[in-house]
Image (cartoon, rainbow, N blue to C red; front, side, top):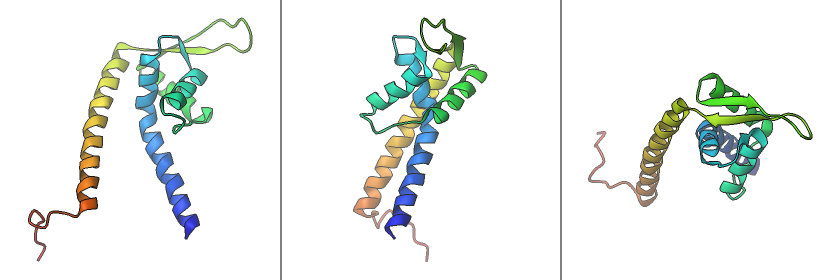
Length: 133
């Protein structure tokens, strides 16, 4: 049974992170005073989450490409003084609007989810519960 719980936890965590990665990527690019590139974005998300969010590069780069294709990020190749060239990302006007919408949606949804969890953990107010009889 422990293996089933562990697999459920792994799947739940993956789905939760995947759903939030676009918003967090936009926020990481927008809030970074330095030029943002993939690895830096990954590390900034890891540091900001206290190590709770770790994303493999193979997960983040497709998200950054999608955000760029949709016009939310602008990507430019930088010159390399050493090592491979890096693609640097800047948030666009449309990206800032999308980020604002995402944060508003997240804040409302997380508030509602936390309230619902609190009520369910305490037990539903029986007077407020509809009768199914």
